[in-house]
Length: 88
Image (cartoon, rainbow, N blue to C red; front, side):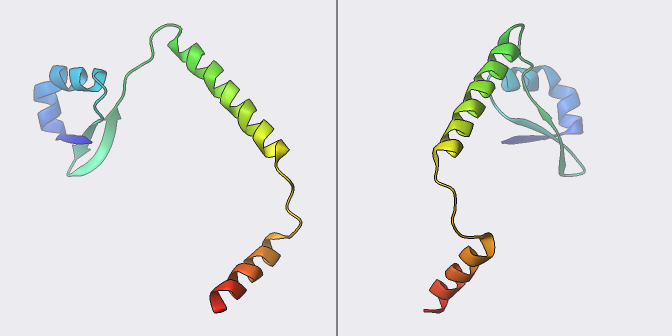
């Protein structure tokens, strides 16, 4: 991750935009602290494709969750078992 001060950004904005377009993570700092990150804006249609892909992945994740057996133990019971394992 490349970091650039506000002053450097003002003097090199065009080249920093080119770096972001090339896939480099460009972070602008103010007083040495990361403040802003540059990212590429999706072109027409790209955002819709990304959303459709996300929907597909979310559906697959839900199917995976549904196919897994449900836990027979409560969270507290599992924690007690883990604690007992560490004590032995």
